[in-house]
Figure 1 (cartoon, rainbow, N blue to C red):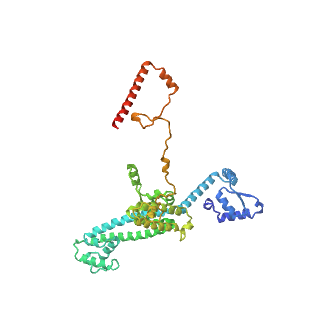
Figure 2: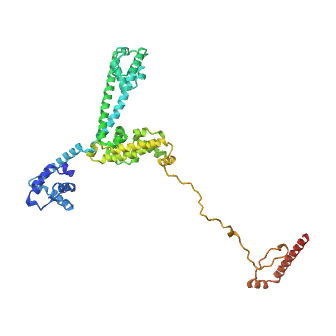
Length: 456
């Protein structure tokens, strides 16, 4: 049933069709009706001499068969038939859940969650060991900083008075061993009892055992990530990739996210707070812990997170949608490795031109890009015609006036017929007024002319 659901022809089905239909000469010209189109194509490829049909008419036929199945099969109770169908559906569902390839990333989600819990427990237990044993030997906390090494030294030495008889060669290097012994000789710690030391040793055993299990779990997680998401692992590492998958729920859910969502995945609280207060949105979330983002300068972390998220989105989609055979090969992480090399080279270029907004501006600054040419006037031989500005005077036939207007030509304006008629029909008072003005103007002109002659 699983093979039929996946559209594959099992060995038993192929044997049955070969013996009952293909080798039977009576059924040589008959057609085989199949309800599943994918399975019909697979049967057609496996058995070339067989004619297979799968269309809407076949679905109508199967609907009638299912309704009359108990009568067609003979003496079968419909209740027994429904019970068999229910049992088959339950067993098939259990098989799919147990062996579904889509559920493999569930192991990664659980492993990374357990790894974070183990880190918290190790830190808590190690802090408790240092505080507890620090009353007896307070100087050792400054000499040995690693949690696992501190617990091993406590187990090996016990009371600090045993420093001369204890061999630390399998735990500490020679420099640290000498400084530890010299500090133990002049320590200001208080004395503790045997019962106190027993509890401290038990707690140190817990730190050592949990640390060893964490190492094994990390190795398991690394192998799982290399098999499930090789390209994502090559780009951002095992821990960051596993946290992205765990935060999204599954690898397929993560593949449906765009690159902008992958970039801020894990910073949802900061994102919604920024949107609510109308401040700047966060530039990175879980992807901040990737080595490519961590090694970038502070001014370039946002730009690097955006570029890493873009390449990570492509790697995730390839890992989620690729075949299992292609992911299991040795060269399955080609895209992840190539993208990592490109991002590292681009980071070096951005670091060399720190302060430039883009690679294009950096290329222009280095003289590699195209620059806009300087504007220059180019002469084509044409010049300005100054002679076109000279205007020749046209004679109008107007005699020069006398007096103050002597030497100035006056334009004679001809009186129209309508103006003449109005002047003749004007009242005697108006005529007399106009004549006075005219005589006065003529007398002024004559006086002006005489005064000019006298001056001359």
